[in-house]
Length: 186
Length: 207
Image 1 (cartoon, rainbow over the protein chains, first blue to last red):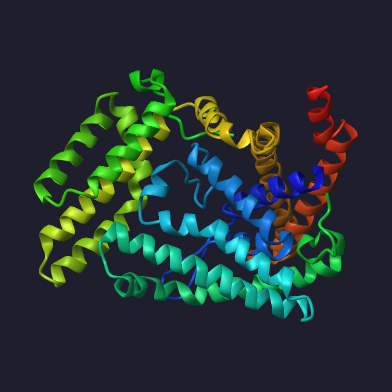
Image 2 (image 1 turned 45 degrees about the horizontal axis):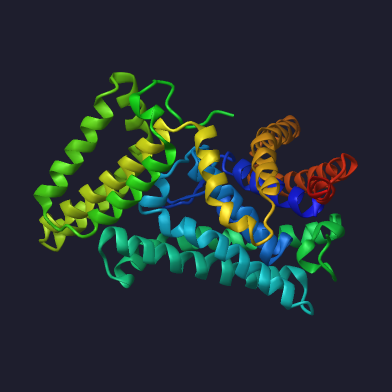
């Protein structure tokens, strides 16, 4: 119980802290922030349930007005604008990513994390984000999807980093890789 | 940690947080049922007046929070200029600015403690399902406490990197950073257990 709470809270704090890493701007002017990477790590390291809870906890704090998202952003406004769909997709993304790592135990952790991050961290987030943009901007799904194409290279870089990080954590702190623990710690 | 609540005291600071949040949801929902560009223009002007009422400092502060919208407003307007549907583009842009503007107003005029009370109230039905509200409160406190700790550890890592290399650290420090966070989580878990743990407290309360 205590370990679960400490891990969930610390990962929420970790994702918030990752927002402060200066964003890298890709060659053609699209910024990538490390927070999306943090969401993937919540799934690959904490597993489905705890990962989703960590992201939900972070979003709750953002909603009540703490500036925890990249660039010191926060507040309810983020949930009502174009970014709303992405934020709603985040906990589900962490859940899906975590679920894949939990269920698929035979493969190498790096490979499994990469595939899980692509499905959870890119497909799921984009799905919710694009639907959110389509609603707010009154566009069709595909028109909104076109706006996202520029972010794909950055997200692929994040998937690669998330996969190698998870592999490195599996070696450095095997007991902390809750997604691959035989039985959930309580 | 600094919250986004405005330091400029307004009358709305004293209104119940639940009321403000309820109104915000209702009005935002309602905005999606109106398609008139004139209505949305007037409504946006009304939101701007709300920002201006508490004075210049408040207005400027609010303006700063809404800056993230500009790229999207630009995309929407240019897009509709191309498709020759400018009124629709303006409706979408105005509505988005009003919705985000109002939500931001609620954030600016509601203290963190009032918001936490609303969260407490909202989770009441969950208590019947065996949810321990202490767990949520402790988690909120832990994140608020640990975020600055992690940020300062991250800065130290960056400094350590810079002392040894002329190149920027970038993503390379994320691994040691994550390991530090995991170790912190283990320490916090042990500390919580050493202080009686969470399940214990709950049992004692029941007795």
